Every structure is written in C-alpha cells, then in structure tokens.
Length: 342
Ligand code: CP3
Image (cartoon, rainbow, N blue to C red; front, side, top):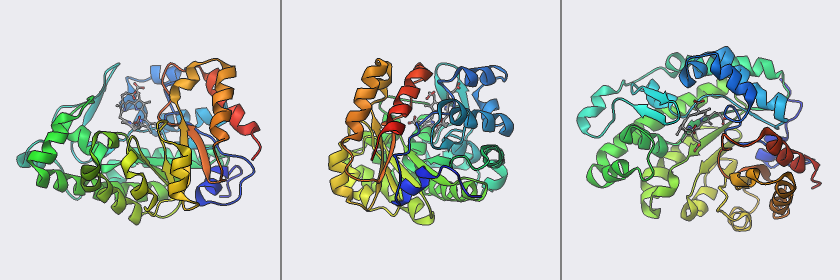
C-alpha cells in the first residue's frame, strides 16, 4: 500500500523531503491519558503487549492525538529473551524482572533452541498486521528489537541496573559464554526483525540502550560485531540507536543501515562530519527540554533544527520521552518541526 505521509521513509533513504519528519522514541504508551485508560482496562503491561488489538490501538494513538510522522509498534525489547525461554515480569513502578538469569554455562540449558519466532512472537506480529490496517497508509510503521548487547544485559542481570556490573563481570570472567549467548540472541533477533517486515513493519530500529557502559574495545567486541550481523541481514530503512556509544560513532557510520540515532550528548555537527551524506541522523533533543515552557521548547527545537546542514535528518528526542511529560508540550515540539522550512 502507498503511504500518504512517507516523509520518514524518504528521509531514511536520503530522498528529497519537503520538511523534516518527527516522532518520539517511547511515544506509544506512557504520556497519553488515552493510553493509561487502555492500560487500566488490563492486568498490566504484559497483558496489553500480548493482546494484539489493544497493542495496535495504543500504537495508533500518538498518530491520531499528537500528529507524529511515524508509528512505533507497542511492545518491548524484552519479548526476545521471553521467546528464548527466559520470561520476564514487568513490576509496577520498578520495571522488568526475570526469575532466571544466565550466569553460567549450565544456565544455557534453560534456554530453548531453534525457536520459531512466528509462533513464539505471534502476538507482536499480529499487532503489526492489525496496526498496519488501522493506519490505512497514513504514516509508516516502525518495528524494533533490542541490540544483542542490551538484551544480554537483561538476561544476565535479571533486572535493570545502573552499572550492569554482573554482565560486565561476565565479559571478563566468561567471555566465551557471553559470545555464545550474544550469538544466540543475534540469530533470534534477525529472524524476528525479518518476520516484523513480513507482517507489516515499513522500517526497523535497533535499541542499544546500554551501549554507553562499555569501553571502546569491549563495545567493538561484544556490541558492534553483533549489530553488524543484524544490519547485514536486513534491507530497507533501518536505524541503529546506540545510546552513549560516542567512540563507536565512526564505526557506526560504516554500518550498512540507513540511519544512526543520536542521544542528546552527541553533536550533530560532529556526527554529520563523520557521516557525510552516507547516513540519515535521528535525534537528538534532550528529553528534559519538554519539561520547559512552550516558548523554550520552541526555542530549543529551532536551535537543534538550525544545526542541520542536510536533508538527511529525522527529528526525535535523544532518548525515550519521560512518562510525566505533558502532551501539550510534545505537541509544541512537533508543531515547531512541522512549521520549519528547509
Ligand atoms: O516506543 C514506544 O513507545 C514503543 C514501545 C516500547 C516500550 N519499550 C514499551 C514499554 C519500546 C520501543 C520499548 C523499548 C525498551 N524497553 C527499551 C529501549 C529503549 C530505552 O528506553 O532505552 C528498554 C531498555 C526497555 C526495557 C524496559 N521496558 C524497561 C527498563 C521498562 C521499565 C521502565 C520504563 O521505561 O517504563 C520497560 C517498561 C515499558 N516498556 C513500559 C512501556 C510502555 C512501561 C510499562 C507500563 O506501562 O507499566
């Protein structure tokens, strides 16, 4: 189906655009009262994510209510370990929690091998198909997965952490185990992303939320190597968002994906000089800008837009939108981007 507003796709591919496309990481869920109403009708996050009709409904909400130029499927990066046989719970106000973790060779036995993602993750794939129908060609639909390194962090640590020191310990004490697990995650992720494209995703994004906690050499070995495998296996618009991976920026620009996501500490000018016109850059307004007044949101957004010296940009925050941001403030951000003449 032809997509009416395909600015996001054209910007991804480096084609001509009339204005910069804009969307927000974590726009599905969190900030909208309409999301909270749907969320309150079920037992929790997991039931919502595993009920395709409801997941589709909250995916479309930001398109209708905020006017973003792309939808991102309502799901989570943790569905991959879940499908591999390591189930998680989402604990209210605390975040993800895994009953089992992988810290020894013997723990690998917990995991299922040769899983069929079409079966285990059918609820996400169905949500994509339903969303695709409900969007009816208005804007592109983004599918996503966690990067292997970030998924490893949760499978070893078993929950969120400020330092992920159990996982980083493993890189020094059992590097072979880390590589074995990273390879298994990579294989499942490739199959899962391909299935998402088959079931209606128009574009994909890889979230490497914990890239920034590794040193340069370690990120090459335990992060980039696996990202590269994923990127090489996938065609079409594809964003790699490696949060905090400053020293890896030159290597990221050499990947075969279309788009590199930048967090708000990264310099647009510097990233552009590394990328040339080879890559679209996505980002990177500080999410905290949206706590300010509407006037200051407009000013900060314009300041960001004025640093762009190329059409190859997708406007976004430098990380996910925070849950207590007012929808009106998000709208002020979006309006500023839409009114900006390039
Ligand atoms: O972008 C979107 O809006 C689509 C949905 C989406 C969710 N999680 C839904 C969600 C996406 C893209 C994610 C990605 C995700 N999940 C990441 C990578 C992006 C990032 O923020 O760095 C990570 C690290 C996770 C793991 C995760 N999921 C954590 C740490 C938490 C708890 C804290 C938090 O961020 O809310 C979640 C829960 C989660 N994932 C919620 C939602 C809407 C909140 C749960 C609820 O409604 O109770």
